[in-house]
Image (cartoon, rainbow, N blue to C red; front, top):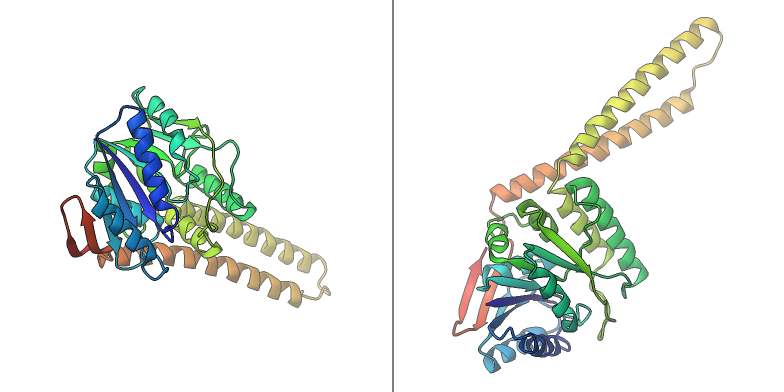
Length: 316
């Protein structure tokens, strides 16, 4: 069975088309055994997205809809979808028609070569300039912090095997990051170029604060920032010792030289800023450990509809 997992956010006008086109494409490819797991990430649209998802679940026996009680974020919503998916092959895609169902044939053809994970990537992106900039920062962060292979290009359009899903859902922290979890699981990964489509309705829901939060989630999969803090500490310690020696020597050679009060204050402010920066970084790690120990949930399920199941009030 193939499970198509889709996090939904303000997608009442697009998700039905996404589901219908994807189902038609899978049928065309001869993949008739499939299900859809749709997760409404508590969309702030007066229940419009949730209503569409419930309607789809009532009309189609192969659709299960998960309605979250609070906004969990795209990656945590994906974790919810993966937890309720039953397929041996799982496909992740977006709800806005940019990850177009017509490109599935290329992803599945590559997947059939024996890879554990296949990503589709876009030689020409249809995102805004701000979103492209955020994607580039994300690319650099994953390369540096997690050690993603340079030749591997990724996106939110992917296919994975069941064992990858089984490993990923063992992660219980509220700071899920799918790419980091995938790279922890296997390196038998491929990527292929596919066409990126224009967004049909509305605009991207990614804001600056959401991109910063995503970057902080990436940081949670690496100790590189802490090592950087150590290296920076070493560098500035050596610079401080050299600077102190220079000042002492100059004072011995030129006793009448006035001490530089302004430069001292600048140095104090600079080094204090560096200290506060890395204290905040360490505090971020400690805070995440604290929340993890307190078992803060990734998501809270308000209702599950479809697949002969209606459940309420579950958290993970």
